[in-house]
Length: 205
Image (tube, rainbow, N blue to C red; front, top):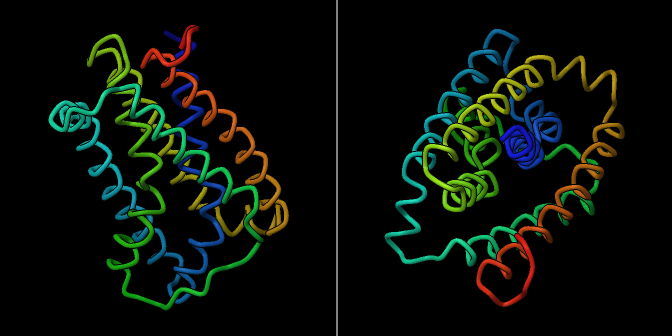
């Protein structure tokens, strides 16, 4: 159980990528003072948490409703993770020029959705909720893992200016490449697990 929890937590942190959010967050919140930034962070994390909770509670139901097998979702999730990893590895260090918006708007989009609660993280939730031995077991692992991810994101965004000054844009760039390589390995493993689950390959998922 501990091994599964560590694996899920690590996957959540890599896909959520709070370090990689720093340049985008600083660009989005450049027009605001520190007090307004703190409010934006709290609102964004609250919105993201609600979205993630909905998928935690209803993700497996969605798969069952549409008749999507866990193996098929493993493969599709692996492909999506590989695309995310590819973008992380081959992206160039830059600050995106995002027009200034009101704080509430920034908190909702794009900070909460899709930067924090993005398609990759939603895929992680549905995938693990649908492939565990039972719903309660998967929920008991995913819920604290997501909480840890949100807390880490909160702390990192609160200290984003200090982290940016310490690591510099190039340091964040290098960290994101390393995380992208690890995520690429997870992606191939997910695809393999999906092929085994569907009986296309022989082996142990």
